[in-house]
Picture 1 (cartoon, rainbow, N blue to C red):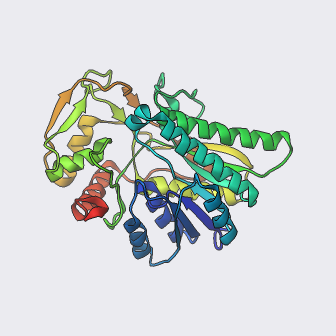
Picture 2: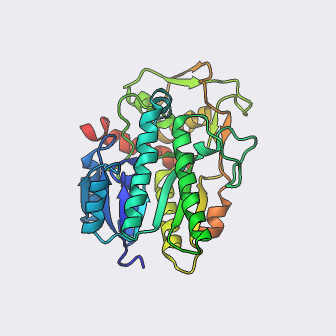
Length: 349
């Protein structure tokens, strides 16, 4: 079906969404993008067109607006949705939980109502490993209990619950409307190898690698490493970092699965991670080795809410959608640095 399928990409101008747009176009899909540009730049869309040499429709609009979505579904014949639109800063979610539940949860409900009204039942949801909270053991597989430690994670889990309930209602009613892929990301990093699209956080970055890049550029004086007394090999926090190009390849594989009528309908969940954890100090060493740039750092006390270690058991995605991560840590560092050097001010240059 992918030869003529049209995919609505919500939040398509953002970091992961823009890379997904490239992957979808290169896989032969047509796309329509909606984004409110609150945390993204229209320049990313121009660059997706330049990378792929393809055109597509872009709507500056908000998924919380029912009329906007209704008009969009009336104008375009949509076959499936890839849903990235959402706020994603953990700290901000703790200080302003209402904003996160309104945007991430209520926005998704508005989207689902519009999909149902226009007969579109296939959706891939951008979820997160934060739905696992603080796991008792690692690696983490999809059967682990769900528990969240902040409103951002809570909003992701609520949306997952909505999709599970929709699929269960189908089963009880003997219908087959919803075909859902819940993709639980671990820690996306890296950038498109062209250096034309990448992560462009507003203000001071919250995440390790974007902050490290700013230190390497001289925009921040040093990296703060929060906690060196965790029960990990070197005492610093361990995470599963996945190249964004690998991550969006997983979205395309999940889409193939949902569009194939031979596969089961209902709600499917897949971890997207490498299955390998790296500590903060290992990340610094890997960056310095890949770029020959030193990253000064200082040790500070642990941050509240941070967990010692988190990495994926990704074999279910390999079995069911024939996906596995291929890019190594050195490539993640090289591509991130290439993007940052080409775009020291992000898209604002």
